[in-house]
Amino acid sequence: MTKRAAIITGAGRGMGSAVAKTLRDNGYQLVLLSNSGGAKQLAAELGCIGVTGSVTSEKDINTAVQLCMQHYGRIDGVVNSTGHPPKGSLLDLTDEDWYSGFDMVYMNVVKMARAVTPVMMKGGGGSIVNISTFAAYEPEPSFPVSACIRAALGSYTKLYSTEYAPHGIRMNNILPGFIDSYPIDRTILERIPAGRYGRVSEIGETALFLLSTGAEYITGQNIRVDGGITRSV
Image 1 (cartoon, rainbow, N blue to C red):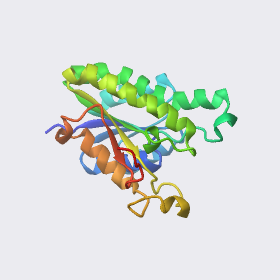
Image 2: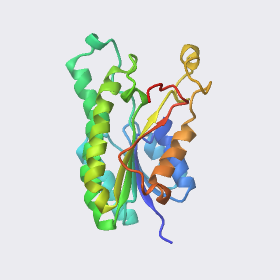
Image 3: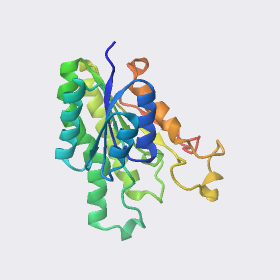
């Protein structure tokens, strides 16, 4: 049986790293990308390919795609993960803050989709998973750039999934709540019905499912993994 292959961005730490470990444990061949060098270090531990580059660079994204095809001959899945865009008081954020956030959490998905979609079409299908945020649909003042721009990502995901579902290519978003890759804030903890922060491993398991054949009828969706903190229906 041919092993499945996937690209993971933002794989140097946090949720991206957890996704990489989960997929590797489940037999995936991987290309990992991060701007810190962490992806190369993790790749050495996992026995896969690591690339140092930025999700804002079309050249770096294309390099990851080319390496995946050169080494594995296929791309079955992509997990787009990034760090947090700029934070701050709404009117104190500069134009540069907004534009850099747009490049980091929206255009990264656009550039990756542009690069991998033709490959997936030739291969008979695939799955793209974007790590978003619960705040996209219940805006959190602490994450203004992320909340606003990732709401737009939801629309892009719906448009993409509609167009490419006939080709067997799916796109979904994971909407994490507060995850244990960041220090625990007791005030925030009190707001979470589950009574704890989420584990990075739980994001990894959700990504694994959305990439799997068991999720072949799921596309264009926003999957909340937030311990119940989102109150809207």
